Length: 110
Image 1: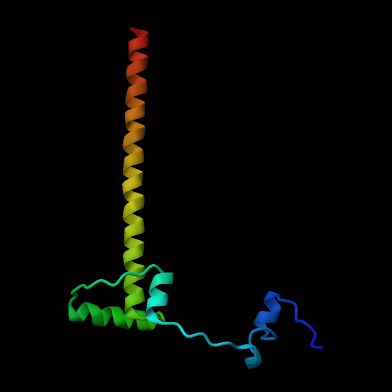
Image 2: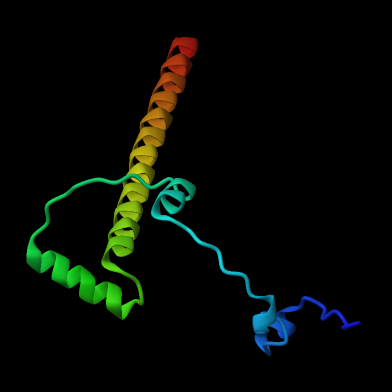
């Protein structure tokens, strides 16, 4: 009987866990499974060749492909824009509430 190794950060860091090839299992994944699990949808877009070359270089420096890099950039942009829009709407609602309160106070004071 083999003693069970406790699953701790140290056990993973010093490679007691996770390095024995006897416990490795390969799984065959196809592109459709990956796309479905990550909720990815194929699109077509035309970009300048120089932009693609730049993105490939930046991706390589960051250890990722240019397409995942593009996804990250677009996600960051969309998240930032949504936050900005929500801030603007909240500010407008706040101003409207303040104006309404001010008007009600004016009416009450005569």
